Structures are given as C-alpha cells and as structure tokens.
Image (cartoon, rainbow, N blue to C red; front, top):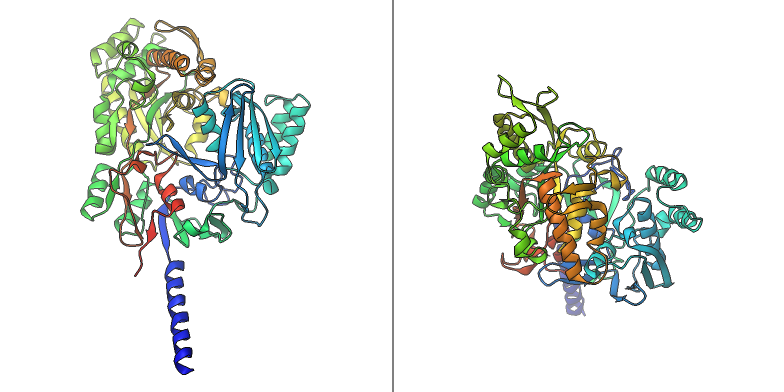
Length: 577
C-alpha cells in the first residue's frame, strides 16, 4: 500500500514538474507600440496599441500566406471558393471557435469586421459591394467589379477578424446607412466614423491563442498569456509571450544581453556584427519594400517631375543602402515602385528595357534643373526659376535606425549637389500622422508591399499617403497625369483595374502601364529594398529554428511573419531544462 502510494505521489510529482516546465515556456519578442493613454484598444482607429506580428496571435485572420508555395494556411476559415459566374467569393468558417470572452465565433463577426472596414475605405470595397451571411459559418463576398483571385484572397483572408460583441453596435449603423443609400463620403458616414474613432474598448478580444490583459501592459513591455480555449491549443508550445516595447536603440541592448529571442528592427551593420559574434542567428527574409523619399507636391518645385528625377540622379543609392543596412539592403534597380523580385513576374523584358534606372549622375541631375531655368547661387545652393533657394527638411522616424541612416546619407548627398537638406527626426508614432496631414516637405516613408500581386505595391506607393486614402491630403500627388511613356493616365483607376477580372495577362498590361508611368513621374523616389537582418536567439528560451534555407523564410517579416506562423504551428518550442 505504501509502495503504491509512493509510486502515485512520484507520478504526480513528475507530472507537476513537467507541467511547470511547460507552463514556464516563454518567448521574448520586441515591437514598438504606444501604451495608454495615447495607445488604445480600438484596432481600427489610429494610435491603437499596434503590436504588429503579435496581433495575429490575438485577433486572428482567416488565413496566413506561405510565400514559397503560394498556398494559404487556414485559420478561422477552413476553405473558400470563387464563383466566376456570380462573382461571389464564398468563405467557410471554422466551427467550434471561441472568442476570448467565451462567445462563439460566427459569420456575424466577419460581417462586422468588413462593414466597419467600409468606414475606413478599405481597398477591398473597391471591388466588393456586399458581404452576407449564408448561415452562421458561411460568408459570401459579392463583387460589383470582378477581382483577381490572389488580390481578393489577400484582402479577405488576411484580414484580422474582430468581435461583433465589441464592435457590432457600430457595424450595424454602417449597414443601416448603406441600406439608406449613404456612401463613405456622405456626411452621415463621416460623422459615424468620427464617433467610432473615439470608441475605446476595454481590451482586445480575439480568437487567437494569446490574451493581452491590460494589467500586463506597461510602457516597457506587454505580456501575452495563453488562452486555453483556443481552438488549436495543443499546437501552442509557449505559456507566455513577452513583447518589449521600443525601437532599435531600446531593443539593441536587450538582444545583446540575450533577453530577446526575435526582433525585426532595422539594426545597423555594426550592431548586426555584434549579434553574429555572440552566436545569434541572423534571418534575412525579403520584405518586398523599403524606404523612399516622399514629397509634398503642394510645395513648389516638388510638383515638377524633372525635380524629382534630378533628386533620383543625385543620390548614390548603392551607398545609401550600404550605410543603412549593409548586406540587408539592395538599391532599387528598375525604379518601378514594386520589388525588383516581382519585376520579372509582371513586366516583360521589352518594357524593362524602357525603364530608367536613374543611375547616379550629377551632370544629368544638374541639366534637368538648368533646363527648368534653375541656377546655382554663389553659395552652391540651387535657386528655382521663382527665385527661392532649394532648402528643405527631410522628416524621418527618429527611432528607425536604418531609415535614419538613409535620411542622413541622402541629405548629405543632396546638400553636396546643391539641394540643402536638413534631417528632422520625430517619434515613429507621430510620423505617419504628420505625413498623412501633409505637414512635411520631404519625408522618408515606405514604398512597396509584401504581396506577389503588384496591385498592393502601387496602392502603398500612391494611395496610402495620398488624398484618396481619406486620411488627409498626404503628399497630395495628382493621380491623373500626362506622361510620355504611357500617355494620359488615371493612376487611381489603373490601380483598381490592375486587380480587376480573372485575366492575368490583361492585368500585366495594366501593371506595365503603371510601372512606366511611375518610372517617369517618380511621385516618390525609392532608395533601396530591405531584407531582414532579424536576430533569432537559439537555445536560451527557444529552440526549433529551421535552417536558413527553409522556405518559410521567404515570408516577409511584416506581412505573414514566419515566426508568428511557427508559434502557431508549434515549430518553435521552449528550451527544456
């Protein structure tokens, strides 16, 4: 009897110890976020507590994309299909999913998510005109304008689904206004958006495997705790995820002290060298994007394409790339507004030969300005034909080490050429607001987008920080232009048309027209394309990192983050001690 009791106690003790070891599993990441009172939990409105890749572990999307295979990993959706005859995209939802407040996930949550997106001019509404629930677990997206399947899938499947219990009150008002014939530009819809912008939920309620309790959120770190009611809980290997708050200067010492297991910040080459010396693995995924110089087109002479072209010629982009990120930055070759990785997929060799690569050429830059009637003053600074000196400010997120380096180098090169440029750094949280409001002269912001369809890159280049976004005048670049390379173009319409229909060959023709127009007009000047230099610490808290050749690393760290996927599918595991 005693032996049996002792054996039973031994088994219980072992179970407790093993359970404790599992429960103690913690993954440490880093992401810059805005804590309260500035930051909030309305994940539609600006200044929300943006946790980037970690949002996918809370407010889960319908699916995530695997770049190497071109396939989707089902999450809240189990399957989907396109009916080309009725122009309907049908999504079948996963049954048995619970929200973190205990409510059941249904089609109503999907409707709420997308109809609130209408308030924010989500691009999906350029094609979709109605979202309906066929039943509790089937949703139909009807297209007024047929859309390329890979574009529609991205807009729908990759959207993080919000809770109807949290947001339904406002979504029902959007639906009611639409039923009355009110559109996004109506006074009623604008008033509702202004009201909803002030809505402040008490917390994020998601369907993902991790919960963010507000009491676990501070200015320095956020701790996500395991949600035991998650539908695929057995694959989740970690009990906690700690996210350190901060940009590169804050996160660097944490990586060096091995307090962070993974980060996607833009670390300078010298810092990356330190990581490697410490034995930290460096992952270099493509981001299909990078920094560009944005111009306020309300300011003369930035509204002249020749001036923007001169600026492109006056910057040695190879140098700008190297000083910013070393091996993880490559200058833009084709200057089309899409990743050079995507150019062969969308642009024929014949059209590629017509593209201006804007190789470094100070003589050509000077000639462009001289032909406009500009002259260099005695102090070496260019003076416009209206007699104003070309002296400008370049706005950059101060905490972005790679972008800050790019800004300083570009300013130095432009000043040497005779366009006196002063860098002004402001906090990364405020930078997008200033650019969207048009409160800048020149600014460093992102070009391109991590999606294989070129449509998304042109949307990012020409809409996100421009007046059609509805978020402000932004760079205020007119989208109807007359070009030598492509004739008269309506870029806004072309962006929409680039994703219309089911004929990829026709879409390529439109993309080529966009590429030619962009290359000539240079509404923004891409500097370089970024590849990650993401530190991944192995063997301290986390193990299971795949080899560098693993196809999962084709995923962009800012779109379908490979580490988020590996946390969801159980590839990454806690170190057992």
